[in-house]
Image 1 (spheres, rainbow, N blue to C red):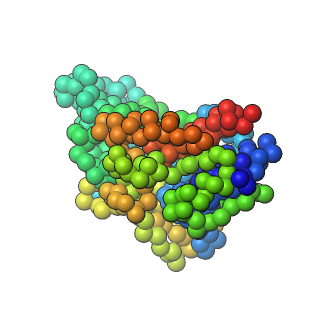
Image 2 (image 1 turned 90 degrees about the horizontal axis):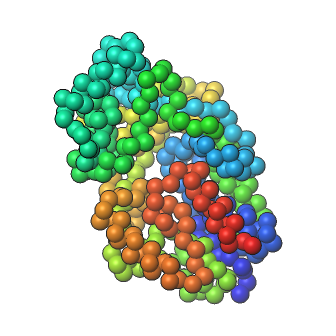
Image 3 (image 1 turned 90 degrees about the vertical axis):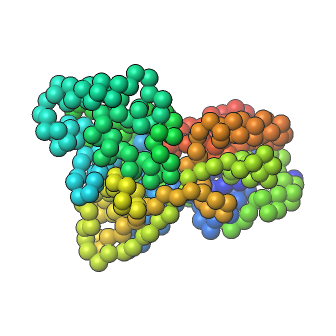
Length: 366
């Protein structure tokens, strides 16, 4: 066996594990079926702008250990996520805060805003929210739900809000202040020079093979190492023998515009049902861009099918049960570590992926 570890996937989980293993003197090979490292945080330079190829990624965390860790591989800017909601041309502040409530209802004080939400909640008669719709109305009232949540969420998940679990929206920020910072996190920013450079720094000195599909030659690859760290889809590893886990996928239409400013903000969410895209990202504003041109990406949510890029696990009851069955199979696999968003069928923020990888390394790399 040539390597101590074969790492399948050059995204954040795989890159962190590879770096830590190398630091411990282990021999490591990283393979990825894509032509580039960095997984879904891959950034590509277009017109001098770092374009987030697989959707906007804003690093945010309350975990000082993780923040200090990533700052060892990149310098981060002070970008603050303050998205805007566009409902048929009406613009509202996200997160939902006093700017939102003032525009929606004309209220001026937090007390007035809270009273209006309470009135709408009581009018709806919701005691224990049973689904996403009821959870949203109980949090922000019916008006905001109808204009700023319902259409966007149904486009994103491809299902009525009444069929989606309430927990999806429990972390929705609602503030009775004028704070436009979407994330309630101590640390936040974008790596200067893009995420790809940060991941390349993590993988410095590690052998990496791209355009290489592990599952196509699994038996041969397994002979190369003592252990495998697998970050691909868990059901694909087991050849879908218990059934296929469901995901939502995202399609992007990216274009270069011969103007310095398209929408004046990094992210604008289109919350009406009629607009086909969920949001438009203007990439230059992630790094306070001054380039004469701009690059925008329209995002379209879609149902995933085999061959598409899986983005968001559909964490409903049916898929949860199926994942637990696959997890049992995974626990019986000797010398395989399943990790990351696809390996654990879990919606992970970037900081949680890194924390999970570091925790695995502390147990594994004695």
